[in-house]
Image 1 (cartoon, rainbow, N blue to C red):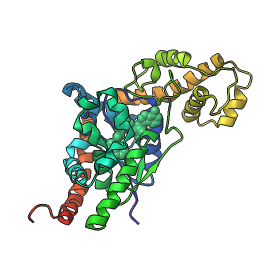
Image 2 (cartoon, helix red, strand yellow):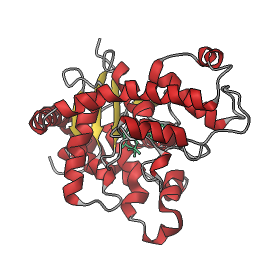
Image 3 (spheres, rainbow, N blue to C red):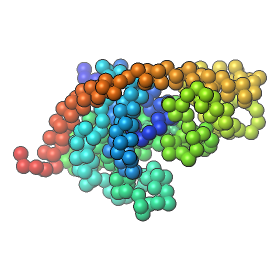
Image 4 (cartoon, rainbow, N blue to C red):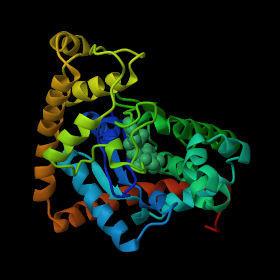
Length: 327
Ligand code: TYM
């Protein structure tokens, strides 16, 4: 039986933080054994806000290295760059014709990202969820492992797939979201807002590039809740987040962590958490440094060839169904 397909992606925009890692990449690793996995570096999404071209190029290479260093195996998974496959843009355009203004105006991430600067935001930033739908639908994806902030976009993808199928005939698989335990890692400086690469303060996140000293400093500075008990509870959003990180880094259950730290101070707990994160992240950093740019280019070239073959075939069917072209 043919394996079901998984598709996901990250924007190559500089900082990769532990929210991206625990929310997305870590669950991708587990899926690559049982699914036909495509993991994309979504550079066309990155340019919805201005990027410095030379930095973007380097960030694409580095993102591929993070995927591999974290445990995405290029022998098992297809790793590729979105813009290497023009079909993503073409399908986005076709889906634009069935996406409605009403669908798009509901997207909360556009509102968050554009903020007060709505009038100056690019049309591409507004249209970004349709490009994401194209990424997913182009490959007949069944499962989309993402963090919580992308759920609304996958819902839109489902709506567009159903609408297209209804209008033109069965074409796209209606995909579903897969969320991990780490689907919503909160900012270390504010546990009410998600950890984000666009955060103003570097104390919001732990980047995969942070060294041990920086990780210790950031965890030490992380905000905590009032009281002194170390418990996993909705009333204690800061501790809930820190315990989640501890659990994700070590696999230790919340009950076990609560028992272990029942008599401890926040200081002791945070010291151990910092070491647990360091033990988890440093080996990834070491693998990152050992991968050469040449190796990455080869992997991305092979990935693009595989993705292109599938995408081109799908686009032939899509164009024919909507009556585009002349042959
Ligand atoms: P991006 O690049 O903003 O984020 C990449 C992945 O990291 C997850 N994430 C988080 N998870 C938990 N806690 C956080 N604080 C946190 N911050 C980010 C995101 O949910 C995401 O899974 N539009 C997407 C990229 C994309 C895509 C796709 C994803 C483009 N096409 C197709 C899946 C399928 C984005 O901007 O993610």
